[in-house]
Amino acid sequence: MDGSDAAVVAQVRAGDSEAFRVLVDRHARTIFRLACRMIGNEQDADDVVQETFLRAYRQIGRFESRANFGTWLYRIAVNCSLDLLRQRPRRVEEQPREDQEEPAADCEASASPERMTFSAEVQAKVSAALCDLSDAERAAFLLRHFEGQSIEEIGRALGLRTSATKHTVFRAVQKMRRALEPVLVSSADGRPRLSASARP
Amino acid sequence: MTGHSQHPGDEDLVLFFYGEPDGSGTVARHVESCEACQASLRALEQTLEVVDHHRVPDRDAAYGGEVWARVQARLERTAPGPRLPDWRAWFTPRQLVLAGGVAVLLVAAFFAGRYTSLPPAPQSASRSTPASPGGPFNAATRAQVVRDRVLLVAVGDHLERSQMVLIELMNRPSDGPIDISATQQWARDLVPNNRLIRETADQAGEHVVADVLDALERTLIEIANSPSELTQTEFEHVRQRIDGEGLVFKIRVLDSQVREREQTRVRAAVQTRS
Image (cartoon, rainbow over all chains, first blue to last red; front, side, top):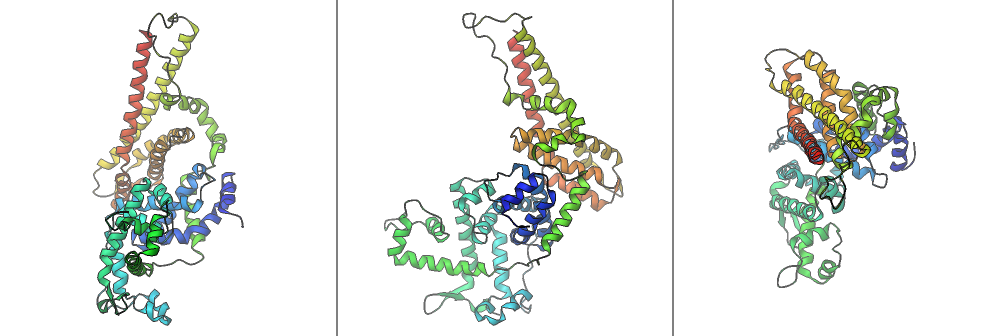
């Protein structure tokens, strides 16, 4: 089925519940990635995706047709993730052992030497840094950094005022920098490089 | 902009990095001519590039279909059919039967404090002549007050009963298999009323109230549809859900707000009468 999200939403609202499948098809993978970064756990992220679309379906009558459906969905997904985080004790990702091989996904990048340097250790450090953010900071940072949401949209998703949203994104970035700067060292041309310890 | 050299603050630089407009364009103009700030931005960019390489597992193209199948199954499990959007949900035969007696009145009652108000008590004889107790205006007002009060009591009772179901579950000892059949029947009876009140709240723009009732409804349905005998793990799951959403607390707050509205209307009625 073709048509913009808004057109499909209109169909669902008109009673064509099957049309909702189109929206799920379009957005499920993006929501999964967001949830995975929010929660840090694949299985829980699947639950969040399911709950997000369930809530979206039930609340579609409240969706304002002028708004962006994807942004609205992000908002629901963030809330579902926060609900889940509040319900369950945070699962800290296991730090990789020194002899641990790189994750399989990284092997795909074997053609690129630069990407090769992003070892499992760096990956784990980024995960740990994300994990150390508060829930609101993590949500704000992920929506800004990975999903390209504007401050205004993030504010709407998190129920924060613009100034508070800006400050939340800023705090998150500062914490990420503090956590990740040790991974980088300055090279002769002044450009930071991955430190030797971070290389495989 | 902060500092003696008029460099933008760190927060401004971060927002500039992310392309957030700063209104006047001061940061952009400054950065264009300031090597120190350009260096700061490069450093920020380099650090955040590390984050860009953070990968999460991906799902294949069939994922959407799988999610939809699970969502559809849950919708079918929890409701007789897909919930119709907007006003159409009010006009299914089942809803009409249920709604016949109470729905319209609930709109008036539950949100009475917001959408209707009693005429103020006469301030002085010179401003208005008190209507005679038997006058048509007073009779209608009294009828409205009584009706609102009765229905506020009904909504309050619904919330109270819901709380009791949840509290009962929360306080059940969980050693061995747990028989929840009695609680289940109770939960099942509460679902239709809850749905009516939630939809009414939603229609009236009371989205916070509707959200609490939505969470309550999902929990009541989950309880109603669970096996009548739960294992400890299943029971813990239900309990964690109630606990995690802070449902008992939220309903208690809502209940006390309804009770307060009820009291306010009683006081207003007494004042009007006197």
